[in-house]
Length: 349
Image (cartoon, rainbow, N blue to C red; front, top):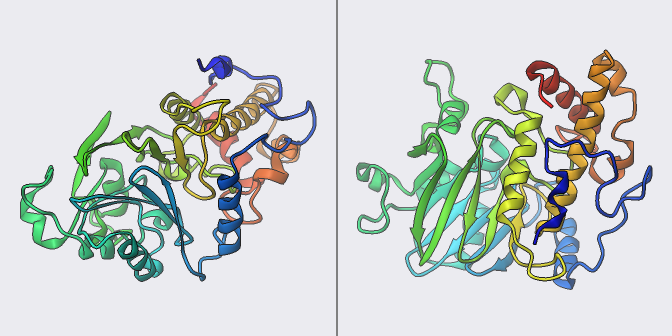
């Protein structure tokens, strides 16, 4: 029973999150599995946390699912007798390395590419990965079979297509070959492939307005995209429809999916957008950290504090050593600013 859900957002949480001393820094997570610790060392050494010029790391998660790290955002790969499913494709400049890593796992055709969102560090390689794949008529084909000769299908929420294409005639953010070919608008998109149900589950207004979790149900693995990362604060991309409350709602939905095996360890494994392989406990800590900061900023807004005052108030200090990136979207300053603007714009809790 998941009795730690009493702090489900948006209920206010006025205590520290699990493992945190009141007013202090978070303690190290107890008794993580040995192979998980080894994965952290491997990923850190590879330059996953910021550098993209080294070799890629390929880790077996469980079941039919593997993680490729170091190409930008993390990539999930499902293999089987029918072919290969790829969730996210990394940065465009790393496509050759990604394809080589996939080919070491399987020589079967790539039939599906699933996008977790519109950010280029996650789907920049989609055009080349799609071109390297095929759509085999007679498999679980859900798109337009006229596209079969053009490569694998790209599955995503409709808002991803809207973000990367140019429906208004403006310059497209990505080449046409990277545009999703099979979209959905609400709920979830289901595919049965390699004897496994795969579900892309829409998460409205989270990091963006086009985010999806991808759940490999038989392998019991979830790929999260930018909604959940272990290397920084989340990217609340306001310009692309993201919001702090949508982010928290998505993390709560993720907690509903994940089930620990024993002593809050193992069970459902989570492939974050960046960082190491995780389980439910990691997601819970991340959710609680964001909730605490959200509540602090909301209280400051009610007091009439300005953005500059909130940025200087130190509301993230007890989490910065663990979550603040040195640069980019995941810094404490960028995160606190996005939280303030999101709450101010939408009058969210």
